[in-house]
Amino acid sequence: MGPGPGPGPGGAAEPRPLLVKIVMAGESCVGKTSIVRRYTEPGSPPATSYMATIGIDFKVKPVMFNDTRVKLQIWDTAGQERFHTLSTSYFRGAQGFVLVYDITNLKSFQSITVWMSDIYEKAGDEVDVILLGNKCDKESERVVPKQKGEKLAWEYGMPFFETSAKENVNIEHAFSVLTKEILEKVIEDLMIHPT
Ligand SMILES: Nc1nc2c(ncn2[C@@H]2O[C@H](COP(=O)(O)OP(=O)(O)OP(=O)(O)O)[C@@H](O)[C@H]2O)c(=O)[nH]1
Image (tube, rainbow, N blue to C red; front, side, top):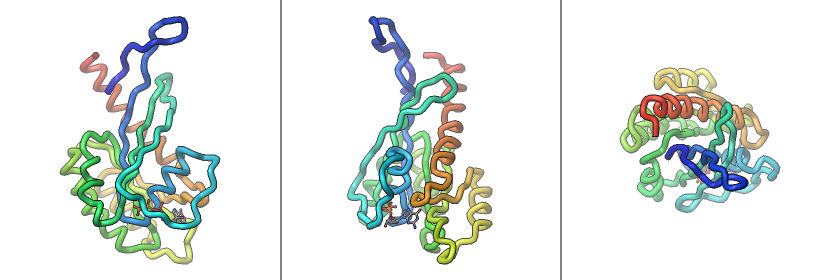
């Protein structure tokens, strides 16, 4: 990873975009694929029926950070238990995680501590993680109070947002907060160890 010379218009070298690897994690059916889709294909309609992610998939989203071109590579893992070993094998080398639970599903919230152990084990405890309580449009079915999400995130020292992939609430903001946290570290690192 890192910027390097690349062919630009007229042969002039221009820096390649910084490549940043982000991994989606969390139980099955919490909305990981819907969040990625909402963020990377903003024009597409939200899915109405559930289709489990089989194995692994990734999407690329180009963004600008200050004056730096960045390519976010977002890996969408399958939350189903039978894919757990495969999904967590993609955690290695990630610079950031979007860890998702569903505010209408208590079990998905209770499993966050287990996902955090997996993340720390595979990607180290310095990695940037944000916690999302998704499906906040389903207020009448809520079983996880917002304060519980806030408290858990505070204990781990990570940002927290309630989101709705369906209604497009906080999706863009969540990714921009995570990207900023990752890039501040990357840029600091580049200044200490210039390539
Ligand atoms: N109401 C509501 N439904 C959502 C939201 N996000 C996702 N869904 C629905 O929840 C179901 C599961 O969404 P997915 O995005 O496939 O969930 P996933 O976490 O990727 O699931 P796995 O692939 O099994 O890991 C689908 O029926 C989505 O339409 C949301 O913000 N609000």
